[in-house]
Amino acid sequence: MAGIIDGKALAQTVRAEVKTRAAAFAARTGREVGLDVVLVGEDPASEVYVRNKERAARKAGIAGRVHRLSADTSQHALLGLVRELNADDAIDGILVQLPLPRHLDDQTVVDAIDPAKDVDGLHPVNAGLLAVGRPGLRPCTPSGCMRMLDHVGFDPKGKRAIVIGRSTLVGKPIAMMLLERHATVTIAHSRTVALGEEVARADLVVAAVGRPRLIEGEWIKPGAVVIDVGINRLDDGSLAGDVAFEAARERASYITPVPGGVGPMTIAMLLSNAVTAAEARVPA
Ligand code: NAD
Image (cartoon, rainbow, N blue to C red; front, top):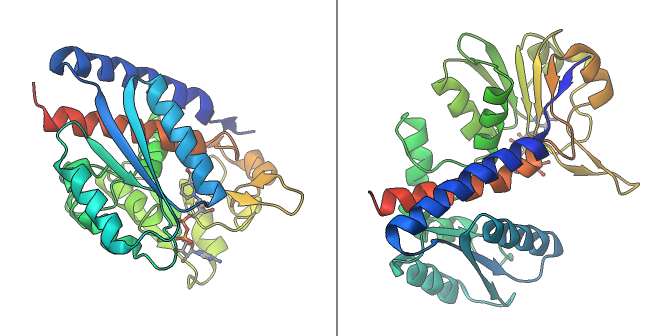
């Protein structure tokens, strides 16, 4: 029976570390770390995420400001705000909550963020730095996954890892991070043939698809570590991951639950990125 990787508890640890670093930054510079979040429109899920980020920032001693813009905001106005935030020296991190309403272009807006303030790690400059193995701000959810692996003492070096999902947000960056740590990485996606056979070879399975129980428990190699990034709302209102948890738990050595696994790590890593950005912008 696999050990459960408790994302809530680990996120608390990360948040405590962030708080200490944020306090040291404030003592040294005379101002708090500044993290500004831009929310366009009234998408209820985005509203919840943004409120959680605001609260978490405050608890960590980070000055979190939210800019709430109406759903009919123009691309021109949004880009204007991003440029203002780029130019404001007291702001270390900028996050534009995605997805944006349809008439706005996510990529153009992300491209406008100063890469040094891109705490989501989605700017092409930061994605490129990750791809060439240089330091930069890195996407929060993949960073949270890596922290979970470190926490259970899983060293990716020489291990076979499979990442299921190739999104810019999760799949690709986590594959890059595992490669950097010397894993032999397979990236599976919607066109992959015989997914079960690919998964069965892996010492580490990272699922980031968004399909409940796509990964069958019987596929998991005995002793493998399973990181389930997927968050799926079932018909009965409950949440499930991409992995058939109970069956996978019988075979894995460690597994993350949904909810309470990767999810809580994402905000913790966002706060960590904000402090990292601040420390880099105002070197000691
Ligand atoms: P996405 O829709 O951008 O990407 C999904 C990926 O899955 C694609 O690359 C696609 O090729 C692949 N895929 C689709 N069907 C497949 C199949 N049958 N077999 C293999 N691969 C298949 O999604 P995303 O933004 O990467 O998010 C993935 C999941 O992770 C979602 O459930 C999302 O809610 C969740 N998520 C969680 C967090 C968190 O904090 N825990 C953060 C981001 C995303």
